[in-house]
Length: 131
Ligand code: THU
Image (cartoon, rainbow, N blue to C red; front, side):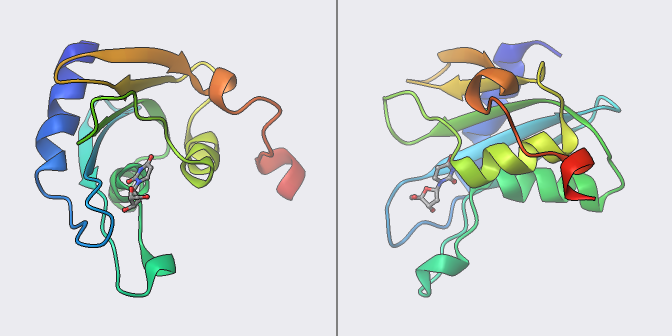
């Protein structure tokens, strides 16, 4: 699966965003360790703290289907500027991906920047410390 295909799936997933409060629409596509793709969109709530980001929706879909590892996450948004995953989503990525996993941060349609999780979340808190 090439990166441009994954970012396209994130862009498509963005169409399903439920973002009546912020108006900021986000889509995500997760490539699992098994090579399957799971998509998600942000889902907001009148009680703002109950909002869930697109990345976590997609990762939780994957994990709830039995996936244990993720290889890459693509994120797209309604903004023309590069979208970066929030801190909570980076921490969730660290639970299921390694420092080398790729994060494709979308810009304007079809364009993206590639980072590793290690770059976006250095010195992460992991399973080994939490036990
Ligand atoms: N949001 C995401 O879905 N992913 C991100 O990486 C950043 C923020 C959503 C949450 C909320 O619905 C809206 O964007 C504004 O914060």
